[in-house]
Figure 1: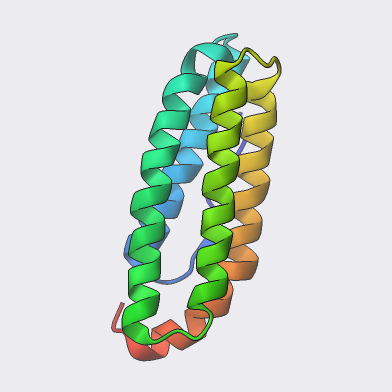
Figure 2: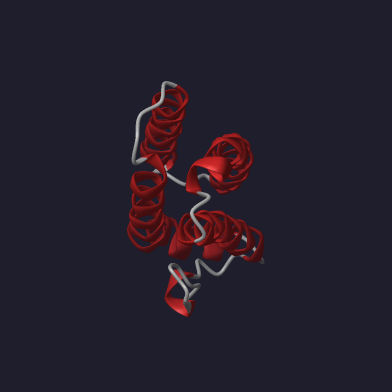
Length: 135
């Protein structure tokens, strides 16, 4: 059973970014599968490490493309990225402090954030950046 499955409506039309979004979706799906197998807490620590690395890499790539294209919404978008990074750090700290229910909370939060971020915020830059790049 798929908890989170890629849909064409998630595409931003820039292959490297779409591939990175799919990678995050796989992380969330892997967490869900681990929870179903009763291993959510086992994988959550490594998920946070991978997620922090992912956010640094993906957000830097996305922001660099925006900068190169002169996207006027870069500052606002960067603030959203910084907010998610802080939320991931806070969740990782709560998990390490022994807070219960973290796998379910984390999976739901990431799923909702990713769908909203791609379909609302990332789609704002698509027309502008598509006109500036050859993808």
